[in-house]
Image (tube, rainbow, N blue to C red; front, side):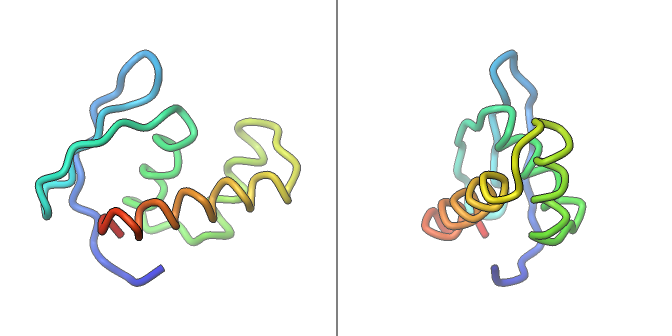
Length: 82
């Protein structure tokens, strides 16, 4: 993932969060997993740290956590957010 400072506002909701990317003016919604991943990215966590956090928080097996992180990062890149 190319390095870019994440300039997002995360508004927690019952089913996850509404996110506003201030740098490109885009709103999008994420579930609880997406919220956790975005918060980690804003904090500067690495891919491996995000995988570990998913494993611990949601009791996922490593391959599933890796897949979830990779898919989320890919979605962010495709949307021009990261």
